[in-house]
Image (cartoon, rainbow, N blue to C red; front, side):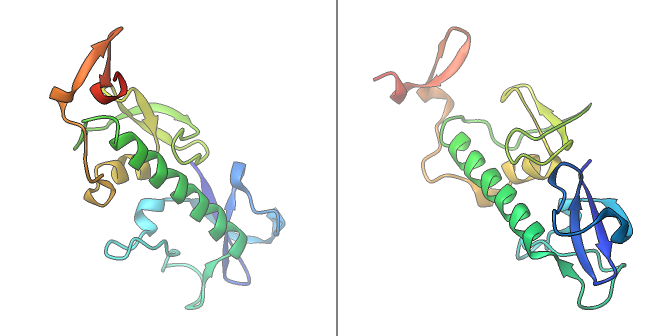
Amino acid sequence: MAEMGLTLTDRWHLLGKHACRHVDSSEFQETREFNEIALTHPEWGSLGVPSDSGGPGASWCRHCEQTIDDMQSRRFNTIIDLKALVPYRDISWRTVDREEDCSWCGKADSATQYDSDLDEIVCPACAQKYNSPGTEVADPPIRSSLVVIKGELTPFNLLT
């Protein structure tokens, strides 16, 4: 899983593959798993920092915050593009015993959720966001507008 670390200056930084280049690893007073779902505010969708560590002014390093924003943008764009092409909604993701990079957002060593209809292994945050009504498209495809070509569902309007 992706990790994060807290420095004495009350700044959280990403570790591992997405490691912040603006801090030395010896400067961390605490490290933990980067659980994006647990740190995201349920109403606003903004990413916070753990409330049980650091002072009241603890926040993300601005470079790491930008990296996270980039991951979230990739996630949103991928999901919107995919939902415009496939009819699958309210997916029951299955946890698999693999940790690879998420193909949707790029989060390192975090892809543990699988769906056979989409044939994708993604991170828990992407799986949750896919099932969110906030990522629905205006004109989603319906199964009756799809045809099977070489064993795969294809939107009918792509054939004409």
